[in-house]
Image (cartoon, rainbow, N blue to C red; front, side, top):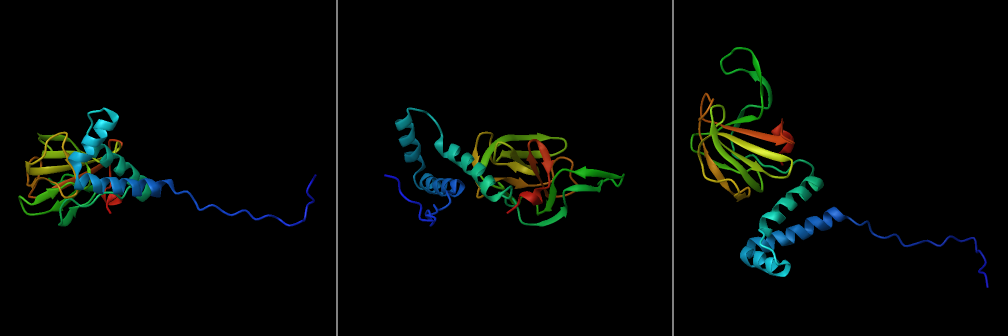
Length: 201
């Protein structure tokens, strides 16, 4: 028996929006808290369950940074030191006064041997020294975002180390091509130097 049309539209209950990003962020936050409270137990439990030998703490930290990028945009970093920005990103006068040059990062004036912190959670990928940067450290925060800290007096991390914003990665100095004590701070996205100010919280 067919039902007659009544002319009245049946209103369907609207479902609340499914915010996958928010759910992922909350999940990773809970996991992150558990890792910090009981890191050894967390790793051991997952390795037993999945029969693996993996550093799940580092894995979740890296995934968390990727999720943070998608939920907060690129602004996932903090200044590694507090000081006056004496030379911003972009064109500037050469230190020797002979024309202009492209400055690939920002220079932050700080006293020698000031503790330098990682700009965010990540993994140390290079700890080296060369003629230009002097002693420097590079940290990978996401598969595309890398930071560099140059002209250090000393480095206190090694490649493969996991770091957070609380981690001191070295002491500021004036090694390499430098006119005085300061920190040279670079941000690279897909291996290209970009304006650090656009990535700071």
